[in-house]
Image 1: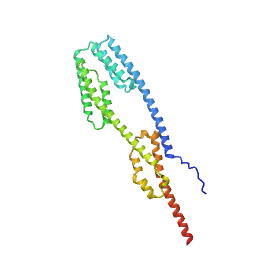
Image 2: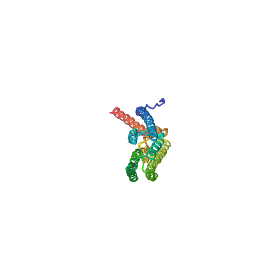
Image 3: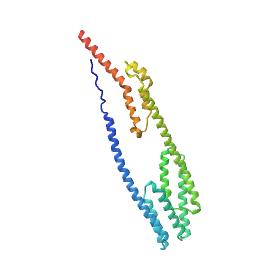
Image 4: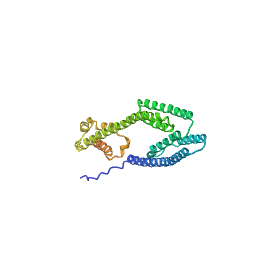
Length: 287
């Protein structure tokens, strides 16, 4: 009588390697993010200093030419300081714009120069509005979104325009930006819905596999009639999901189901090989 042995599945070396690589990736990404946050915090402190310097300019009684040169120097340094923590972006920009506008509005500047500066800023901001409006028809939604972020950065770096034009110009720029942001959001919502459909499809296939009476499959013909004709393996391969979902528990059931799906094939093949070997030995003994 053949003793039954407890079957122990061999360790999946590929899965272990994937986990190891994922851990290395996570550690490196965490280090990169930590450095980015450190730089952003330093940039935030620098921009706060520049805003304080702007405040001092507004209250200063020094020669206008010196004040203006100092103001342009602050503008240049502001442009050079890049990313800050996201939660401070809006606040910083509003304060910087407020004090920049106060510099033009409160200090007694030569009207001719003031108008020239406003005109130049108006031309640049109008050009940005036109660029953003053209991006609304950009086929690549992701590219349009990233280009929009750069255009918003350029907008912040440009000085103010005439007071009576500020609100309308910003409304135009904001309206065009909203359309691009909405397309970007809808794009990812569509991807998410598709991923959910794929997940449900794979789950249904796993359930079909679990309901198969594998011990009843005695031959390749049985396997083909029950499994091969349904193309379950092909369906499982076609219903792909994004790599980010690989660690989810329900995703881990898919490779296990695939292995179970092909186990009868392997068993039947081994039985055929054993039977052929036995018959070969029998023929030799008869000779």
